[in-house]
Amino acid sequence: GDSVTQMEGPVTLSEEAFLTINCTYTATGYPSLFWYVQYPGEGLQLLLKATKADDKGSNKGFEATYRKETTSFHLEKGSVQVSDSAVYFCALSEMIGGSQGNLIFGKGTKLSVKP
Amino acid sequence: DAGVIQSPRHEVTEMGQEVTLRCKPISGHDYLFWYRQTMMRGLELLIYFNNNVPIDDSGMPEDRFSAKMPNASFSTLKIQPSEPRDSAVYFCASSSRDFRSLPPYYEQYFGPGTRLTVT
Image (cartoon, rainbow over all chains, first blue to last red; front, side, top):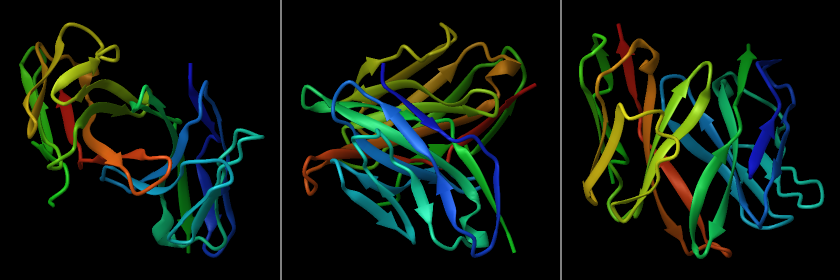
């Protein structure tokens, strides 16, 4: 079945450091790809998305490019801030017969940014 | 819109008691999901509904868990009887199709969660 694999955390960085969180997927069809973020004590919220190959999703300085050839959707940010400390989830969703399939989540990567 | 609303936000109960978690999805959304999150198991999909009909309940751990969606604006997740291993954060999420994007996709909007502690 479909699956998402993301790098295990926790990841600890200093403020203004470069961030990469790797995410690869397996899917039988042509999924949409997402990064969700969960701040402490809150639910998940969509950070960015890409729905087709070579699409780049971006939001709040974060970027990820849908790479079909490598089945990857790595999350990057050039300069992290303390406020970026959160858990980041990579996810995919496939349309099945015109209807939504489930969101398949990775296990999450906890990011801590130190001042 | 107020977003997905869950109640209660925190629930502490004793083993053997019945627990009912409630969710109000975003108006107009046709999918509703229940998830459970623990440190050990991460985020697990328990069940989801489309137009109030359960589509996949394969993630429901056992018969002690049940979920209903009597109408488009309300869903419940019930645990009876509760056990300490049910302690977790339970999230409700809703979604609908976004036709502004090609291909169209579904974005799930999560509620703030219910933190359940069973002693």
